[in-house]
Image (cartoon, rainbow, N blue to C red):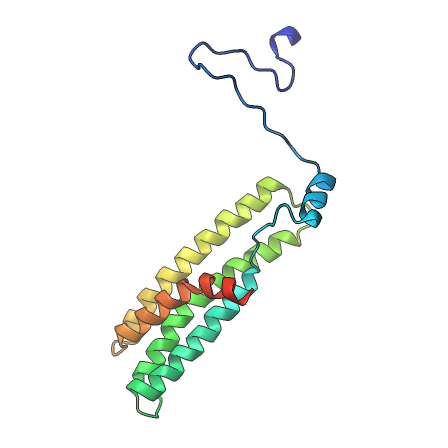
Length: 166
């Protein structure tokens, strides 16, 4: 039975392909660190909490714009609508990041559990976003949808802002 299992990285040649199969080079941690230190590779990482912070800052900026241009110096339904749009943008992202932070602090974290935390965090994010939209539509019938949606869409695009902030 053992002779039926091919040795590691040994593949049976296939007649259906003309080209030989490429071998994938796996680098060790030390090799990756050496490449990173030499500046040959740069890993593009973006701190997720900076994205949430930029979403909050954009929400505040949107509220200030509503106060000065739509509300003529006073806080009214336009300002609240912009706040609610930003809240729909950054609250689910914050809950998603908190779910990942809890998973990282787990004593028994392995790749499959981290992927499960990632999927469950994304599920939480989607459900909370839908609940916030539906809840706001029913709880605030006089909400102004233009500033709400503009602020929400701008908050979704805050990843670009965080790249420049980096």
